[in-house]
Structure formats: C-alpha cells, structure tokens
Image (cartoon, rainbow, N blue to C red; front, side):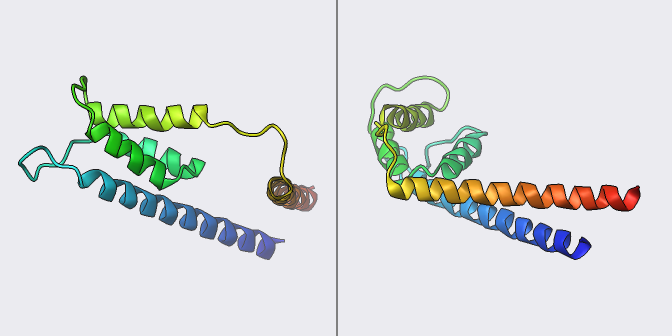
Length: 143
C-alpha cells in the first residue's frame, strides 16, 4: 500500500509541475503581448496592477485562448480616455470577462464533450476510490 501511495503522490506532483509550467508559459505569452505596447514616443511599457498574475493564471486554468486576450489587449491599448488605476488592464480584463459571459454555449452536449467529461469523472472517481482504499488499509492496520 505504501508503494502505491508513493506512486500516486509522484503522479500528482508531476501533474502539478505540468500545470505550473503551463501557467508560466501562458503568463509569458500574456506579458509578451502586453509589453508590445509602449507609451507614445517612449520605451516605457504600460504598467500592470500588482496582482495581474492572479487574473492571468485564472484565465489559463479556465482555458481562455491567449488569442482572445491578445485581441482584448489591442482594443484596450487603442481606447482613448480610459480612467482609473491601471485603466488599460481593467478595460482589457472587462473585455475578456464580457466575452466569456456572452459566448453562447449550445444546450445539447456533443459526443466529444460527453466522452471528455466522462473521462474526467472516471479519473476523479478512480482517484477517490484509491484514496478510500488507502485510508481503509491504514485504519485496518491501526485496529
């Protein structure tokens, strides 16, 4: 049982490392797209709020296409008379969230969606069953 637990933990850490790497790549793509824009006549980039990474990581986890964010950045950077703290980022983030909210999703499920969703559910169920089996094994040994 201990070997199984160790293998499962190794697998989980591998998944977490992969997620962190993908998040970092997504953040780099965002920053590259953002830093293309400079203040008129200078090499100074448009500032980002201190917590901008939280939004970017959330979009990465949600699977928001970077192309949508790039388009929103362009729209925000070319918009005049924006006000407030970090107005370009705020406006850009609003475009991203509004686009996500307004995107129509068909009510019916496709075969591909059902297969993907079911595979995810199956993995979750198997993981939960493994954890339960491990805990029951520990409880049995402790009794």
